Length: 476
Length: 96
Image (tube, rainbow over the protein chains, first blue to last red):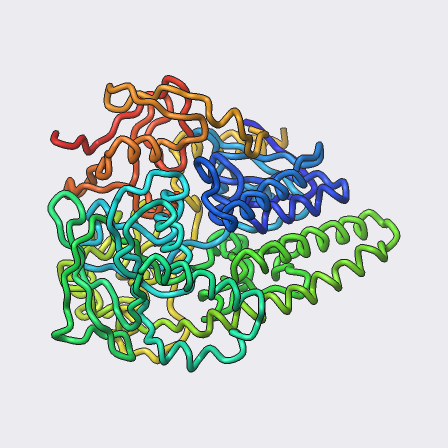
C-alpha cells in the first residue's frame, strides 16, 4: 500500500487548492495536492481545447498557467486521478487511485474541494442532452458540446457565463431562462452593482448575450424535456414570485440540449466526515464549515478554502487558499518553536482584509438570487427524483405521507439517495420538496448522513484496510 | 502522477477503441470527450430500467456516464483520461 506523507495536504486542485499550494511552496513546506480529475485547475480553470477564442478566454488561460507555474516546486506534489474517500482511526486520509487504496499522512489539512450544481428534477430530465450548466461549460471548453441548439435555464449569475461560453463554441443559445423576476433581482441588487470590477464583468456578459441576440427571459423555467432517445424540445413556462409555474404560459421550444443549474452547493462531505461543525448560510449555498478568520475549522489543523467554505467564485477562493496555507505554515512554525514571522503576520492581515472585501461582494451578488421551493411544483408523480436508483416522486410521496419519515427514513425506504452519487444530485431537491410538503418554515434543510466511503470505491480498495487493521493490532 | 498540465504533449494523437471501433483521440481527452466527439450522446443504459444516459454533470458527481475500461473496470467517462490503446465498452450502444 502506497503511503504518502507531507506537512500540508490539500484536497482539490482548483483555484483555492492551487493558490494554497503556491503559497505553501513559497515557504518551503512539503505539500501534496490531491484531485480526482486527470488534470489540475478544477472547474474554473478547466482546460480549453484549442486556441482561446477571445481576450477573456486568453486571460483565463494565462492566469491558469501562472498559477500552475507557481506550484512547480520540489516541495509540491500532485496526486491526480486520486479520490479522497475517508479517514483511518489514526487520522490519515484514505485515498483511492486506479482501484487501489493509498494513505496520506499530514500535519495540516486544507480542504478546497469546491462545490457541485444544485439541480431541480423535472419530467424528461434523464434524457441524453440534458446536462448541468457547469457540465455544459466544461464540454463547450473541451470542444465537444453535444448539441447545436440549446436553452440555458435555472437561476444565478453562472447561467450567463455558460451561455457566453456556448456562444463562443458556435452553439445557438435560444434563450437564457432565469427563474427570478427582473424586478425582484434589481430590488435586491443594492450596492453590489457599484463595484467597478464586478459591475463591468457583469455588463460584459450581458453585452455578449445581447450582441449575440440571446434573450434573457426572467421569471421563466424549463418545465419538461421532450424526446425519444434524446432531447428534441423543451416546454418552458412562466413562474410566479414564489417560483410556482403559472398555468397557461407554456411554450414548446425546439432544442437538442438543455443546460440547467440553480446555483451551487458546497461539497462539505469531507469536512462533515472529519467532524467539523457546520452552519447554514443561504447566500453561500447552504451548509458551510464554521471557520475562524484563519480559515481553520472547529477541528484543529483542518482548514477550508474556496467554494467548499461558501459559494463566492474564484476571487475569494484564491484569497482563502493563500490565507489558509499561510495560517497552516505559521501554525507549523509555532509547533516547531520557531520565532514569529512578522512578514507572514502582515501578509495574513492583508489577505484577511482582501477576503472580507471579496466575500462581501460575492455575498451581495448571491443574495440577489434567492431560491424558492415553489419550483418543485414542476415535478410530477412520474418524475424520476433519484437518477441513480431511478426513484419516481410517487414512491417518495408514499413514504412521506403514509409513514411520516424524515429524509433518512425516506432514503432507506424508497432508495432515493442510496445510489452511487450518494444523494449529491437529488439530496437538495428531496430535502427541499419534503420540507415544503410538511409546511416547514424556510430554514435549515435536512441533509443526508455522511459516512465512508465518500465516493464509491472498488471493493478491493476497501479490502486492503484489513491489512491496516492487522498492523494496528499487532503494532507492526 | 506529478505533471499538473502541459501543452505540446497534450496534442499527441492516440487511438481509443470504443465498443471495438478504433477512434482518434488526443492526450488530455477524457473518455467522455471521445464519446461525445464521435456523436455518442446516449452511451449508457441504467441498471434498473435500461434507460439511456450520457454526460449529465461532466465533473464526476452524478455517476451517469459510467463505462467499462479494460483493466480499470467501471469508471466515470468524464473523469478518466484516455491512454493509447485504451479499450472502452459502453452499455448503451446506439441502435443495439
